[in-house]
Amino acid sequence: MAKRIKTLRLILGDQLNHQHSWFKEEQDNLLYVFMEMKQETDYVVHHIQKIVGFFSAMRNFAEYLKEREHEVIYLKINDKNNKQTLPENLKWLISKYKIEKFEYQLPDEYRLDVQLKDFCKQLSIDSEAYDTEHFLTSRDDLTIFYEGKKQMTMEYFYRDMRKKYDVLMLNSEDPEGGKWNFDKSNRKKWTGAPEVPHERGFRKDVSELLREIKKAGINSFGNINPEKFNWPTSREDSLSVLNYFYKNLLIHFGDFQDALHTDEAYLFHSRLSFALNTKMLHPKEVIDSVIGHWRENKDEMDISQVEGFVRQILGWREYMRGIYWKEMPGYKRTNKLDNQNKLPEFFWNANTKMNCLKHSIQQSLDNAYAHHIQRLMITGNYALLTQTHPDEVDAWYLGIYIDAIEWVEITNTRGMSQFADGGIVATKPYVSSGAYINKMSNYCKGCVYDVKKKTGKNSCPFNSLYWNFLDDKRESFQNNRRMMMMLKMLDKKPEDELVNIKERAAAIILNPQNF
Image (cartoon, rainbow, N blue to C red; front, side, top):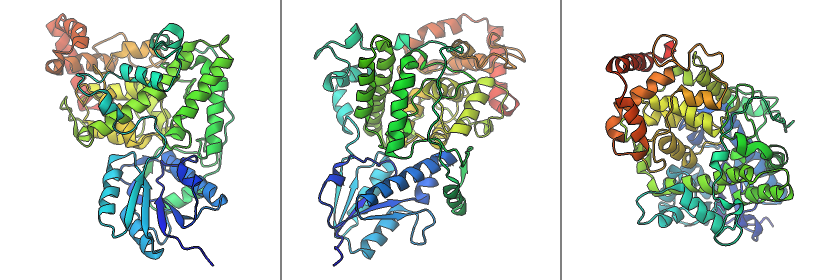
C-alpha cells in the first residue's frame, strides 16, 4: 500500500543544505518540493550563468534526495503544471496531494519571507518555519550585539565571532599572531608573480538546460559556454573547489586579495561564494578546512593569508546578513546622497574606452564573477562618482553575479559601495580617483586616458569625477572626520581648476557613451 503524504516541505534554490536535520528524521509522510519559477527569474534580469547555476544545483540536490528515497516533486521551468509563482504552485500541490501540514525553511530574502508568511496566514492547514541551519548567527544576533551603540563597526562584531567560535584564538581573549586583523598585509599589487595555478575544474555540458530556459522565454544577459560551464552545482563540486583553494591558492590569497590584473579573472580567490550562498557548503566547514590546512603548513604560510580569508566569511558575511535583517525593508529605499542618475548602457555590454571598467565589466559578463575590489573600487566607484541612483546599481549587481542574493548584494552595494545608507555599513564612502586603481592594478597601462591628468581631453575620467563628487556632496560629508583631509585638499584647489574639473565631470555624466 502506498504511503500517504501528509506534510509538504518547500526547498528554495538557495537552501541546498545536504546536512540539514530535515533529512535525518523519519521520512514517512513527507513530500519535498523544488520549483523553477518565473517569479524568481524575472524580478530582475539575471546573468544566464546565474539562472543555469541555480537550476542545475537545484536539480542535482533533488536527485541527491531521490537517490536516498526521499519523496520529491520537482517543477521544472516548462512543466505544464508550473504556475510560475510560489503561492499558486503551493496551493495546487496542497490540494493535489491532500497535504495536512506545510513546512518551509526561513528564506534569506525579505520579499520571500513576507510572501511565505502571508501565504501561511491564508492556509486552513498547519504550517511551520524552520531555520536553514546554515549561518553562524541568527537574524537578530547583530541587532542585539550593537544595541545601544552609536556605530556598528564590523571589527568588533568580527572579534566577538572569533571568540564565540574559537577561531584563530590562543585563548578566550587573545588572537593568534598577536593581531585581530592583518588587512594591511592584504594590499599587494600582483605583477605576474607568483604564478597563479589554474584548476582543470569540472566543466559540464548545460546545453539542454539552456534550451529549456530559452523555450521558457526567460530574459537574461551575459555570456556562457554551454559545453564548459564551470561553476559548482553539487556538493561534490563544491568540496572540490574548497579543496583546490586551500591546497593551491590560500598560500597567496591574503597578499593579493585586493589586487587587479587584466590577465587574471580570479587570481588567488576561492570562487566559493556561490557554493556558500546556495548552502551546498557550510561556512564553518569552510573555515575549519582552511585553518586546518594552514596549521599543517605553518612553516610555508603566514597567518595573514588565512586571517584575510576567515574575516570575509566569519566577519563580513555574517555581519552583512545581520545588517540586512536589522534594516529591512527600509534599507531597500535608502538614498541618503540623493543620487538620481541612470546606469550607463556600457554596464550591459562593456562598450567603453575606460580600460578598468571595460575589463571588469567584460569579465563579469563572461564569468558572472568579479572579486570584491572590482565590485567596490571599479564598477561601484564609478557608479557612485557619477551619482547613479542606488536602485539602478542594485538591479545590476543583483543580476550580473552568480553569488548575488539580496541579503548579501544589497548590503554590499547600497551600503558599502554606494554609501546610500548614510554610513550604517561604511564609515566613509569608498571612492577614489584613478590613483588607487593604478596602485592596485595594471588597468591604467594601455588605457587611452592618462591616470595622472585631472582635466583635458585625455585625462582619466575617475580624476575629475572624484573631485566633482566631493564638491557636489560636500554638505553630506562636512561632519565626517574620515573625509576631512580630502575636503581640505578640495578647498585648496584654485577656482579655475575646479571649474575645469566640474566641466569635465559633467560631460562624462551627461554623455557616458562617449567615454
